[in-house]
Length: 242
Ligand code: HEM
Ligand SMILES: *[C@@H]1O[C@H](CO)[C@@H](O)[C@H](O)[C@H]1NC(C)=O
Ligand SMILES: *[C@@H]1O[C@H](CO)[C@@H](O)[C@H](O)[C@H]1NC(C)=O
Image (tube, rainbow, N blue to C red; front, top):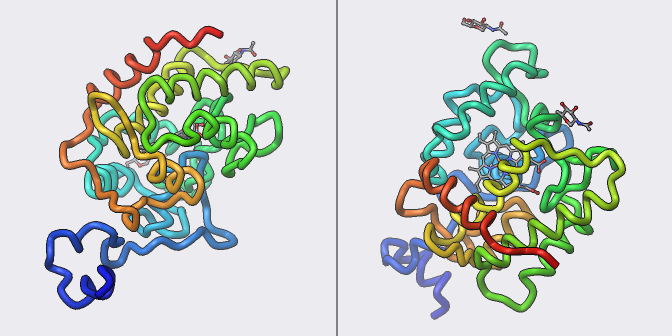
């Protein structure tokens, strides 16, 4: 009998727990009118209904608790950004934001891994061409190491700074880009070496889908601000000069 059929009969077996989206959190692509952000993780959380599927009117309690509950990330390092976006919210209601409100400086920045430059007119949506450059560093490899992630990031910064006449990454945004490369290694790999599964990372960026169906589940140990800082530091320490 095939494993999926077996698992539908006896779902309590331990090896059946993985490869399934949690009850009530099946993936659905965004629909017309839904609000989405330049962050592939917030979009994934909305696509799975951990955040409102329409991406609208998110309060800070929802935005923080979802990180803990769905991802086992300590929300503390994200609180500043959440507070910041509340101040420029388009919802017209106190204390809530729409995902699209994050598509502006300083939250949105140049040299993204999967999005185009704001100067191109679209820094919001996944961009296959931009992503192709990032993903070229992962081709033929089952896992993404810290070194590979560092080279992919550096390659994007180099191209963006060459092709965008208005290129501008502030010092704080440079730190953010190291952290963001660390975030996907931590969510889909391990705290020490990264080694994030390439197929999981591709599902995350390309479909904004948490790769439950490919065996992923949220990290067992909480990812703290210190973990993110340490991973960002390791990425920044990789010599990437050409
Ligand atoms: C409430 C919490 C969060 C907020 C407000 C937030 C916000 C953002 C924003 C505004 C961007 C766009 C930056 C750009 O221009 O590229 C971004 C990118 C990113 N975020 Fe989040 N984020 C949050 C949580 C997370 C978490 C928990 C992860 C874990 C994996 C994550 C992973 C990423 C990654 C990998 C990118 C880079 C995307 C790219 O360069 O194409 N984010 N985030
Ligand atoms: C939102 O409400 C809080 C508490 O009710 C208040 O302190 C704050 O100034 C309000 N913010 C805005 C932008 O209206
Ligand atoms: C880069 O952006 C920052 C903040 O968005 C701004 O303060 C600064 O003036 C910009 N620099 C240039 C050269 O445009």
